[in-house]
Image (tube, helix red, strand yellow):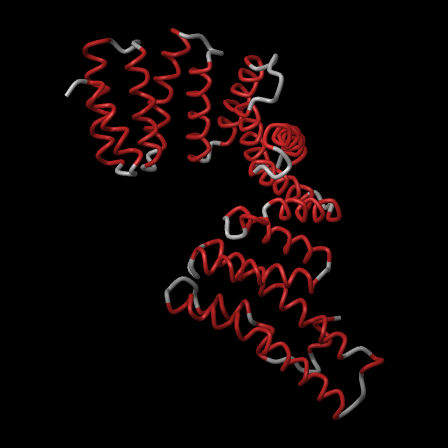
Length: 344
């Protein structure tokens, strides 16, 4: 096989997620190109990038970073720092650093890529999607680092661009609006955050079982819970958990996150009910007080039953410990008159 044929076959294996086979072939292509064309040839640099991509897919982040750096150095020397091919490699290197958890390095590379792509597309009549995607990616990293104001500004700019390019119901616009809403909630702007999440969810109605739609539903339930809108939060939390269990399975991390949120909402709802039952206007001494407490306990146990069964199923699959279930349902063991001191 020629070196081109080897690379093409490797790409076929990569597209079918047969990365071990792709890795062997890309290594052969790289060595062949180094030997016959030299380490600075465009085909060799492309082979470095291909090899880095496969290493990244296999979780070998250090090796991926090594080969992306080799490709980037060669492209900077032969094409220039701001060439679009060079910027693409810099972007991939940034993603590799992100996967490794080296967020500062990732931010520096994404900032460089964003500046370069803006320069290339400054005269475009409509926003360029590669620029918008870079804004979005940089904002996501800054959000993860807790640099929320910077992230919010980038998300806002990206949202405006996506709406221009994709229209009101574009997928990227909906995802970006969800991220904006989530940041606003983190910044304690609960009113704006909740309304932005509602808008994002409305944009995603046609993709109800999409992973990001379910994430937006989860975020909205959490925001409503933080606002104290318990009943509405409960509705969205139940919807999200049942959908995630159906789509991803009960052992998936997203499903477990929904269960945790739903359990917290149920506990809060039950405590509110108990507080109401124990309010002086509704409270009597002796047998009437005992009946109020018994009724509150009964309601709490009934509301928790279905969720507890789901968590017990997780435990049986060794996905959740018995101790964790006990922690989630500590309110369900029974409340007594002495609980009034705890709740006060």
